[in-house]
Amino acid sequence: MSILETLKTNHNQMPEKYKKIPTEEMENRVRQIKEKFGSRLFIPGHHYQKDEVIQFADAAGDSLQLAQISAENTECEYIVFCGVHFMAETADILTTDKQKVILPDMRAGCSMADMADIDQTERSWQVFQETFGDTVIPLTYVNSTAAIKAFVGKNGGATVTSSNAKEMLEWAFTQKERILFLPDQHLGRNTAFDLGVPLEQMAVWNPHTDSFEFEGKIDDIRVILWKGHCSVHENFTVANVEQIRLDEPDMNILVHPECSREVVALSDFAGSTKYIIDMIESASIGSKWAIGTEMNLVKRLIDNHPDKHIVSLNPYMCPCLTMNRINLPHLLWTLEELDSNHVINQITVDRTITRLATLALERMLQKS
Image (cartoon, rainbow, N blue to C red; front, side, top):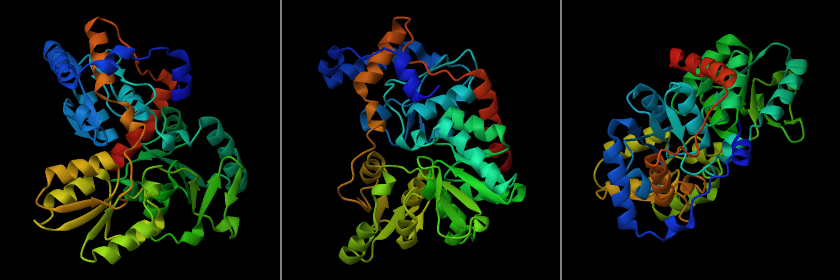
C-alpha cells in the first residue's frame, strides 16, 4: 500500500493538545512510557531525525540498518519507527507478524520514493522489454516503496544501498547487459560512472512522457536511470562548491552520492551517510569540512565534533521536510496511545508484496 492509499484509509490525526504541552513535560512522559514498556518497545531513529526525537532512539542509523536491527530485536512487540514511510515498510517486511511497526506521523513520506510509482514502473517495463528484449535487470535503491521492491524482486533484481551500490551494479552486469536503476538517477549515475560506464551510455527515462532523455543510439544504452531524485541532495550545487573553494580553499568537501554528478565530481569525497559520519569521526583535529547532506545530520556532526570546523555545503539548506514530520509531540502521542492499548498508524505490507520484496532484499544481502 502506498503512502497516499494509507492516508486515505487512516484518519488518525494528532490532537491539538499535544502542541501545547511544554517540552520538558513531553520528554518526561516519553521516558516514563519507555520505562514502563521496557523491551516490549523499540524506537529506531534515522540519522536525519530531529534531536528532540533522536534522543529517545534505542538505535540510530540508516534505513535498512534500522529495519534489520528491528528484525533482530525479537523481544519487542512495538516498533515505533522514527523515519519515513518506506523505512517503516521495510521494517514490517523484515519483522515477524507478531511485531507491529508504527509510524508516528503518516505524512512522513519520501518524495524520492514517491517518484517511482508502481503503475508507471510496470508500464515502463513493458517498453523496455519491447525495446531491449530480455537484457534488462532492475535495481532499486532501498529508498523506494515496498511495491517497487516487490517489482524488482519479481523481475530478478535486487535492492541496493548507497554503501553497496557499486558492488550491486557489478553483480547486475553479470546477470544482464543493461540495468534499470530506480528511483534516484543521481546515485545510479554516480555509481555507474565510478564503474567505468561512460555518461554517453546512460539514459534518463521520464515516466511522465514515457520517453528517454537521451541523444545517442538507443542500442548503446547500458544504464537506464529513472527520473527521480532526492529533493534535499539535489539542492547542493556546483555554485556551492565553487564558493567554498573561493572562500576556504583548504576545506574538504564531503557529499552524499545522491547529489548530482557535477557536484560529486568537484567534491573531495562522496559516500553514504555512514561513510560521512565515519569520515568526520576519524578526521584530524582542526580539519575543515563542508558537508553536502541533510541538515539535521550536519548540525549533529557540528555539535558532536567541536574540535573540527564543519559547515553545510549549502548555507541556506533546510532539513528534510518529511523527516521533520516526526517530532516530539507526535512521538508522545503515539506512545500514549500505545499505553492506552490503542495502536495507531500501523504500517502493514501485503503478504505477496512482502514475499517478492524480500527476494530483492535477500539477493542484495547475499551479494554484499
